[in-house]
Image 1 (tube, rainbow, N blue to C red):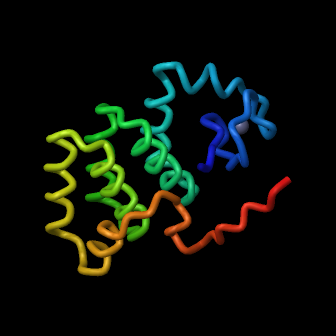
Image 2: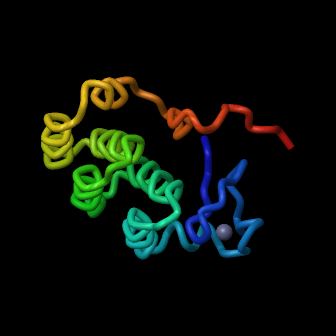
Length: 137
Ligand SMILES: [Zn+2]
């Protein structure tokens, strides 16, 4: 399990109460309604790793509000990894609407992307950028 600070998006090695990077109250923020809104807003974040993190977290949270934004991002992004992550998140959310939109997306993606979606992985390091090395502290 990988954790992210919902405020500054720093990757955390465990479930902190307060972010060691920005000091925000992670638990409080995670429980608040705005958390989903923040994640949805992060889908359009200019720093390319942030939308992928947001997509990944939204898939885990299974909040229905994320379905449309995930679909939109899957349609409009030119980033293969982001699109695959968004479609996977839709599959993960798993409601009828999410599944329908995921299927719709899959009709338009390349064979490679389809395989990437089908190949289930629980970690965002399916991005290939990160090694699984989580240097234990
Ligand atoms: Zn933080």
